[in-house]
Amino acid sequence: MNLILLTQNETFIIGWVAKLLGMIMNAIFYVIDMIGIPNIGLAIIIFTIVVYLLMMPLTIKQQKFSKLNAKINPEIQAIQAKYKGRKDQESAMAQNQEIQAVYAKYGVSPSGSCVQLLIQMPILFALYRVIASMPAYVTKIGDTFRVLADKIIAVDNGAFLQNSGVDSISSAVSMYGKAMTDGNLSNGIIDVLNKLGSADMATVATHYGLYGSVFEGNLILSENGQRGLIDTYNYFLGLNMGDSPMAMLKAAMAVGAIGIIIGSLAIPVLAAVTQWINTKLMPQPESNSKNADDPAAAMAQSMKTMNIMMPIMSAWFCLTLPAGMGLYWIAGSVVRSIQQIIVNKHLDKMDFDEIIKKNSVKSAKKLEKMKENQERMNAYAEMKTRNIQSKAKTDVSQKSSAPASSTGSTSSTGKSMRDKANMVNRFNQKNNDN
Image 1: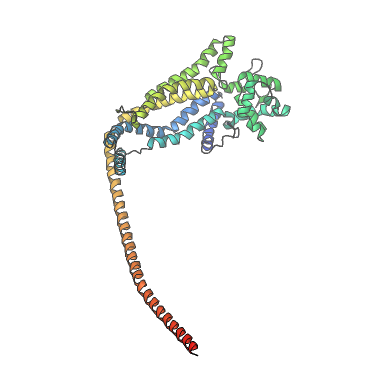
Image 2: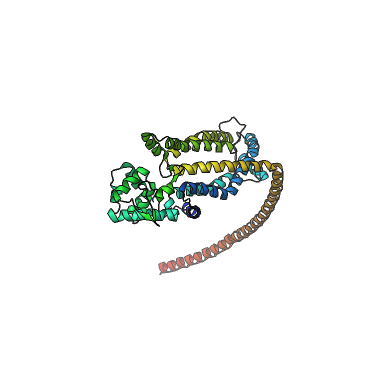
């Protein structure tokens, strides 16, 4: 399967979500194009805001769980300490019941946070797919690139792309151009063109004579100082969203372009800073235990490590990936941070003691209902047991009478055999006398 398909991603679940998000992205680009600012960078920012707003209910639920979890942990730790060292099955069952009762009291599930993350993960992966393959989901961008693809096919069916000898072009073809050999040459070429940086695009455009190509009366590639559609789409605050900050930094340092150098460095730096702020705003798991084997303590330590590593990883990814992905990363962190502030204020206003009280009442009713169901099940099981025992007694009684009948039959059969034997003896004696 292609890493990126112009025909859109077909991965299970993620592909479906990507199509839905792609419709949102296409609608956003259509609107900003109508008002005269068709720009991928702006579309990514608006797109990120819209998607995270749609995910707001899930975020609130997840953060509510985290807030309650901070209150639950001390009680869970007390129960674990109570049963520490007791490995018998009865103790394990009792510990599990007490822990379940604590979760029921607070009205949350042990897997509550995991469920929220499982719902959000396909959305986040789909977001990446849409942003990384804009021509596949935004109609106007795809149609613009297709004009160039048709010209390339008319010249040599993309042979130069596959055999250019330029490492970066060959890498783009090997990673994203599989559709070129899978029966959809046009889509494969567009996938590759979408991944080329400015220098590589210039190389391809020169070889194929793509300068002067137009779409809907507009120049596609910049020429003689006139800006083309692709540059209009891609450039945001002076940076090409299709180039990686590292590539732009190298090119800018070669010519001494201070503005591009600052802009290229700003993307990974902002990604790291906003990610760090985001992690600081999120509720952190707490543990009073110093025991390294304690799950809560291990989780708290793991979160501290992740809070250090995530900003560093964010900076590296946003330095090497296309600037559009870096912009999405920064926008996402900013939106999450704003969301987190709002959610924290909302949660701070909530009366958790009242919530716990209501959940305790619900839990008591639920336990009462479970008890009634269990009593009915026990009564049913007891009735079934009596029926089985009664049937067993009947079978035993029948079996106990069977041997007597069998003995009588055996006796009768034995007597008959003796009579026959005596007759045979008398016959033999008679013959002997004769």
